[in-house]
Structure formats: C-alpha cells, structure tokens
Length: 259
Image (cartoon, rainbow, N blue to C red; front, side, top):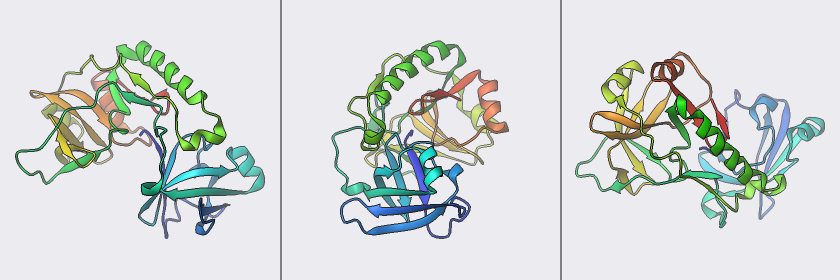
C-alpha cells in the first residue's frame, strides 16, 4: 500500500544518515515536530502521492513538501515537510489511486485467533501476485491507474486523489496454489487469519509470515486463490522461488509497476 510510508523515530540513524536537513513542522500551528538529517536515497524522488509518516510511534499525514522534487532538495540541501496527525486529517480525497473491485467478505470469527494480520480496505490487494500470462491485462490496468495519478498536479498530490480506478478486470482469475506446499516452500514461521480494519476477519482469509515477507490472501478449500504481500522492498531468493515456482508476477498497483 500501496501508500509511501516513511519511518521516522529517535535513534534510527541507519534510515537518516546525516546529509540533508529535514524539518518537520505542524501544518496548523507551525511548531516544529521533529528535525533530522536524511540520506537522499532514503527519500522519494518526488512527494507526488499521499504520504504517511511514523514519528515516535504516531502516524502523521504529510500535507505539503517544500521543495516537492528531490532535484530541488539536492540543490537546497534541505527539506521541509508540513504534517498533521493522521487521525485528525480530514479529506474527501482517496489515499490510493486504485482499489480492487471487491472487498472480501468479513465475518465475526467463531473462535479467537492468536495470530492475526490487520489490513485496511485501502491496502487490500495492492501488492498482488497474479499469473504471468495476465501481464498484458495488468499493463492495460496500469495505464488507467497512471492516468488517475497524472490528473493531480504534483503540488496537490499529497492531499490525495479525486478519482479512483477500480480494477474490475482483475478479480475473476484465481490462482490455484496448495496452501501446505506454499507454506513449506517459503519456510513459513507463523500463520493465521486476516482482519479487515479491526472489525471482523476475512472469510477464508489467511496470512503467512516467513523470514523475509508477510503473505496474505484468500483460500478455497485447501488452495490459495488470492495471494498478496503486505510490504515489498526488494527481491531475494525466496521471492524468486515464489514467482518462478508458480509462474507469477508481483504487481505494485499503487506504484504502477510489475516487479
């Protein structure tokens, strides 16, 4: 999700090597929320999409970046971010430019589960594994998503999208991956249910935690029919074994790319 999330907390020197001054100020009061030194490589090339930051355990929504583009940040050697607490930020715009056609059915579980993964509706199926032979359809969908993103000027993009592309064509082609085989192949360490936005669990939903990734999706019987990733940073041997072993591609819908 997928939305761009920057982790900012005291003591995280690896994320923010001391190169560029980042001043974070409250969008309403103008008071300084935090000041850090950041490595340019840890920052996005442009603040042109809704962005949530975590500062000392609290979620903040970035409402303005000065400058917007990283080439200007390099010349200025500094960046100012205006933020507002995410819980207090109100907007009619969408955080994401695209959503899956249908949200899964959520039901109250009959028994308690110790292992639960919580997914918001905006995050659902935003990093999605699909059969490789669907790539032509995927590329057509990405063009439509890019059109939604391009309608918003860069200096307004942090506030969200006026329209959302619903992926109607990507909902009727389930996978068929035996759950037990998949769990063993990724050397699963934990499995459980998926909760939708803290309300109820997803019917026939599952998650698997391996050493490097968190997978989630929906099952029919003993088979995985929808398979997604919670987050994705880079590919490794485990990722390669998944996409090659089951002839899949990973689609980052909000990023407009096939990994």
